[in-house]
Length: 92
Image 1: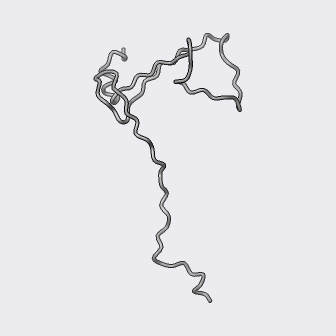
Image 2 (image 1 turned 90 degrees about the horizontal axis):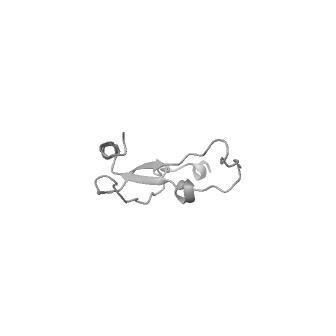
Image 3 (image 1 turned 90 degrees about the vertical axis):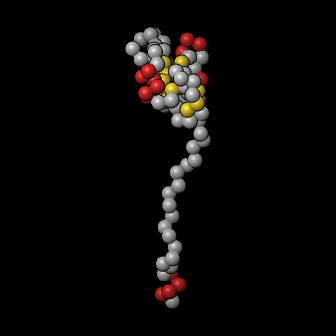
């Protein structure tokens, strides 16, 4: 009866699988090459303190940066890597 509940020796333990990420391809803002894992530089406009800052609600609707509209719209620049970003005119 003891052999019925014994774990077999030939079974390997489960391996944790990482979730599949879809490949993101973006054109470099500086050199024009296509990058599969781009460095993204965002310029987000600031609020005029303390007038326009919205009240934080923990369960409220979240808005992505890219989906902001009007004067709150961001500018997103894609680069091949940090080196290409450093060579561009974005750095001072």
